[in-house]
Amino acid sequence: MRTKSAAAWAVAVLMLGAAVGGCAEQSDKGPSGSSAKHTKSHREPEDKPDSRVVEDDDDHTVLELSDGRQVSLRFTRRGLEAQHRHASDDAWSARKTVYETGTKPCHGIRAKAYRDTVWLAAGFGAYCRDGEEPQEVIAAVATGDLSSWTTDPTKNTIAWPKARIRDGGARVDFVDPSMLETTTLTWRKGSGFAEVATKYKPIHPWFVGRWRATDGSQQLTLHQVEPGRRARVVIESRTGPRCKGSATVSGIDQHDLSMSNFKLDQGTRTVNCPPEETKYSFDVKSSDGPLRLRKIGNHPKTVLTYERAG
Image 1 (spheres, rainbow, N blue to C red):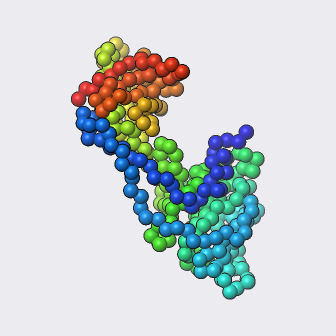
Image 2: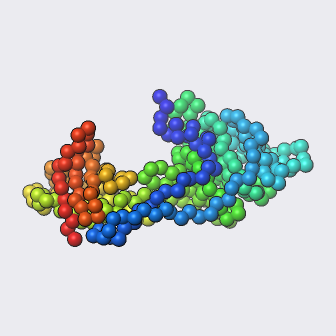
Image 3: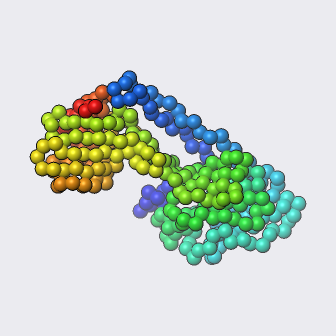
């Protein structure tokens, strides 16, 4: 059976270098202010790839750069190797190892260029060509005379379906966007690859703040995303046995906020502390509430209602 990651790699083969669609970011005037406003995020300017593919199959890709030079990328028994030649020269350079591994390659080498900056992503896995997910995915960049390549050292398994070229070829962002987060691996000329960074999508601002159940049983405090950190909720009982803990939360709008990875900090787990993650979600009617805990199903049922507590 083809796994989710394997399917993502197959799609990524067709998508490297495509622009990522703009994502709407949310803001409002505060918990008790007017309704939230949605504004488009401002993306940094990008340079459009100017290379063209002149040969391409599962194991070999040849790019032609805007100055006429060509780059040959090939899977071999040793891993991934590169050669280049000038427009006026029929002879290829000696093979250069971009990435050495004994693991079998996945289908296709994804590569593009802008001026004299060439970037690629390639995957390797024992059963990758049978539909299993890659065990290793590498990103690499070469510039100038193309005699050397800088390779991401993390050996992660992110498919990097998109890449953005910026600053005239001095920066390449390998990007893995999803509905709730965007993961980016950045290469810069002179400093190489930085650590992988993840930006989490904010939850709807109406959720943020402190809420108390109308039956007096518990209190919730919802915190917005922070750099490198997901949005989260702190749940604290107000009656009965002591229960206090926190969990991450995520959602695409005000109608569906889900919770995961609850960690108990004090006391013992009780009814709705926490609610069962796969069976319940939150929604909110306006910036002033109410907030509701709903049981998921064909006929959603409100289990608890909360009012703002300042």
